[in-house]
Image (tube, rainbow, N blue to C red; front, side):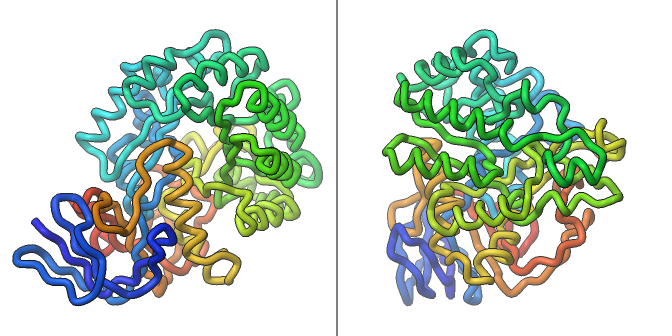
Length: 430
C-alpha cells in the first residue's frame, strides 16, 4: 500500500531539503519528494505543516532484556522510543546474561523483530561478562550483526585489555564505545566531587575519574587506529580532549545526554532525588555550558539518552543505595527543541546531524534521508505542542526521569519505520 504525506515541512540537510512538500512512500521506500504528488491507491495523511525529519536514532539505550525485564523490556522500551520520536535505538550489552556472544545478539534481534516498535541495533560487550579479564566473542558477534562494542556501565579498566579490544575491533572496522570511568579513582563516589558532594555530605566522584580514561583511550586510538566513541562526556576538559583528538585527525567521536546538557549538580536538593543519581554524575554549570558549546560548534557528534530504567522500589531508597541512571527516550527530542532549537542555539539541520546522521555513521549502519529510493524511516514533530513531563505521560515501565514536572515545548506525533506507522497522532500503533 502506498502512503502520501502532505503539507509536511521536510528538513534534511543531506538532501538540501527545508520546505513544505509531499512525500510518496511505497513498499517501505520513499518514491518521490515534491509538490502536487498523486497516487492511484493508498492512504493520504495531511501533516498540517508539522516538521518531518529523517528517522531519529538513539545510539545509547538500555532495554534491560534479557534479565531485568521488571525495569524495561524490548517491547516497552521500543514503545517508549517510538513515543519519543525514534525510529531506531542501539541496545547496550549490560544485561543478564551479558550480550558477549552471538547467541545474545541473535536473541535481542529476534525479540525486537517480534515485539519491537522501532529498529534495534545491538552493541556487543568488549569483554566476557563485562569483567575486563577475557575478550568477548567479538568476531562472532560482528558476524551476527553487532554494530559496535562496549563495556558500558563500567568500562574496560585495564589499558592492556582495552588495547587488545581496539586491536581486535579494528580488524572489522567497528567502533569501540568507551565508558570512561577509572574505578580506582571514582571508588564509591555518588555525586560530583566538589560543591555538590560537600553540600550533600556524599562521597565525591571526581571529574578526573572520567578524564583520565578519555585521555588513555584517545592514546590507544592513536596506537591502534580503531574508531573510538567516547560515551556520555560530562566535563569541559573531557570535551577539550575530544576536540584536540579530532583536530589531530584521529577517528574519535563523542556523545552527550540531555541530562548532562540541561541539568547540573545544583539540581540535587535536600530531597535527595535519586532520579538525579546518574553515571557519570551531573557536573557543574560550567561543564554543562561547555557541553552546549560543543553541541553548537560541532565537537559533539551525537545526543543520546543513556535511557536507564529502574523500578520504583530500587530508586525509592537512600541515595547511596539507589542504582545510577534515569530514563530519557520520551523527553529527549522535546528537551533538545525546548532548550536548543527554540532558543536559537542550533537549527534543525544540526538536530538531524546529531540525532540521525552521525549516530548511523558511527554505528556503520545505513543512513536515512528524505530522498527518493531511501528507506522510509521518518520522524514527525509538532513544535506547537506544550506538555508537562509526568509519570502518567510516560510509556516506559519505569518513571525515574530527572525531568518530572518540567514543561516542554514540542513533541513527536508520528513515527514511520520502513513506511509503517509505529506512532500516529501521538498514539502507539498496535
